[in-house]
Length: 314
Ligand SMILES: O=P(O)(O)O[C@@H]1C[C@H](O)[C@@H](CO)O1
Ligand SMILES: Nc1nc2[nH]cnc2c(=O)[nH]1
Image 1 (cartoon, rainbow, N blue to C red):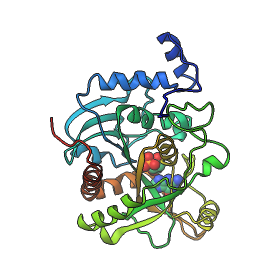
Image 2 (tube, rainbow, N blue to C red):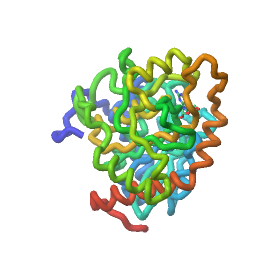
Image 3 (cartoon, rainbow, N blue to C red):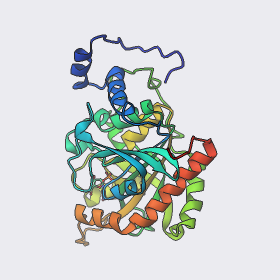
Image 4 (tube, rainbow, N blue to C red):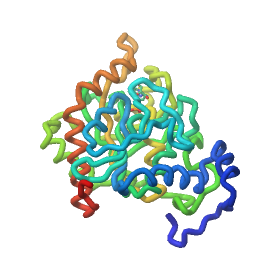
């Protein structure tokens, strides 16, 4: 939020007009409405936001003292339409830390513009989060990766942004963040280093990598030529999400940690006949759910201890 709280946007007094506007662009007032609907029903302020990727919804199952809001009940929220995405916002405690978790996310290929896909990040900011943990299922492009490995995201290539498709497109509201936010420190270096230690502690040590993620629009998986090009660009894992959520989070000065579960190996040879499919993506998520839950719990605990976030059960 800008210090003076001033905005370059006009604010409209009457509510019906605000809600009408929400169909075209999530104004600050519209998202305040959404956040207020939730905060009126949740007796604590979440400090860490979590986004569960495809097949990773089980990360939310460990949340205690939960309060669940199906997306269709939340004003102005889109709906999750993809298998492997439950479609609810879960408030509660993880490692005794107050959290809010998206059990299911939104994707560009579902027909939502990027600003709509990333709107829950702004709602979570308005609810009080200071840190975001984003997870996703991704294809492994780096030759060292195997199915079931974890890639901690050290950076991303905003491929969709190269064509100007960006969640921050359009008028900027200074109450969220600056017109031109820097992205060279998008992924918190300290959290990355600590996460590697935590990964070892939960038995993931020898399957954890650090790499570059990119998001394509989808819904198709990539061709051989596309993957070869991405490999030449230095991409280690390929997905269809996360980048626009991270850009939106960094715009609002949220500290970000993100990781990919490698659910399939990208096919970069014409003689190979393997084909990626969503069922396999979901299955790999199920295979890894126990260790990943412990991993995320460890990262959340570290964030709370390091930042002295309020951590008490109700
Ligand atoms: O939501 P994420 O990015 O984890 O899901 C990935 C991308 C597609 O939605 C899906 C394809 O199987 O996995
Ligand atoms: N774009 C993309 N997203 C994925 N999500 C899981 N696997 C893949 C993949 O191979 N490509």
